[in-house]
Image (cartoon, rainbow, N blue to C red; front, side):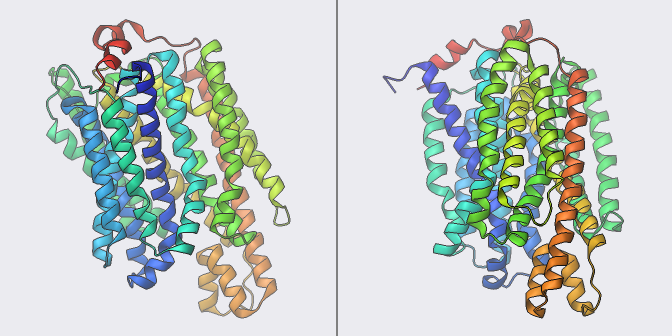
Length: 520
């Protein structure tokens, strides 16, 4: 690749990772649009439709920690390329599935591949970039993940209107092929010099614990927090994860290589950065869960129209990313994260005053404010954690951060979804509605509007819309409270000055220019 200097190659590599992140994010959002089509074409039941989503999430959450350790041991570029290839194969398998079982298996393969792509994408940043450039690279990756939310409905709506349902997966293949080529050409190989041994018991305990926790939370979100299976699954997961922590401590005391280096949490900024980025994920996921439903069921937009009206979130985020980078470099991550969380919290609190008669102008205003705050806060919060990692531990550390954020996102959907559903059902007036129809109305707002149309009842439609907006407002107020609490926590958890790479990083991570010079 003559004619492209080492520094440019590093940024091309980040661009490839950002594209991969967009594809993986879109894959998570676009499927929800195709569920009704899949129910008809594959004769899938409601529980099978849910497994199209949950099978992906379970494997994604379970495999992230092993993925980080395997990247440190065998090479992050090598495993990242393998994961991208698997994601492309899984996309093809999804597109041409002819049965429910085939599609669930293909979705599991996609989740397995994504579990390697996401943490390894972040793991290469401490190797490729020094601190002053790393946050910019982080902003690109974080921005790509958030961009997937409006792009999913836009792209999915167009594909489903123009082609068959498999096209929502087939579109991944050429984009992933470009990402594979860019990673192969521009990214240097990196691995731990000490080649850590595999902690098989740690892998088993963490994998089963995370699967149990994710499954329990999903079940609780769907069937209620008193569901016996959900509670049993979460209780078993807690036992397994406690055993995992105890085992990791034992391995560390004996001088072995644990799957998770618990000493990372003693590094200034690591635990705080991981916790704050997870809180932001938790609070933002509620907005992503509720607002598309509001735009479609209450305001009546189709998938593409809803996606277009989410774009102010991305626009605000782009502006926030630039300002957050400048503030963080000049005044330290604490101020950038504090201001970002405060702005996002204010936007979420403002959004909680939405009423059923508001137009899209008010919605787009608070979406832009929330996006701005998110853009300011997320990269410096993550960089506070990633910046403490050396080349030796970047895989395991990045996987730990990503796994925590993934669990936070699943919890956010379950907890905040329950908040919305409870408030929605409490406000419904179903007087005179037949029992079977009333049950459908209680399920969700889309079913409620459909029932109202079938019954020809404008009064029921108005009740459903008003009840959902009330539920959404309660959810957004809860998310805003979490964001404001996180702003206060930033004062305690983050260092006050701009972090440096430190002596430890210099000791065992190769200089950026030497790593980049080896590309090609």
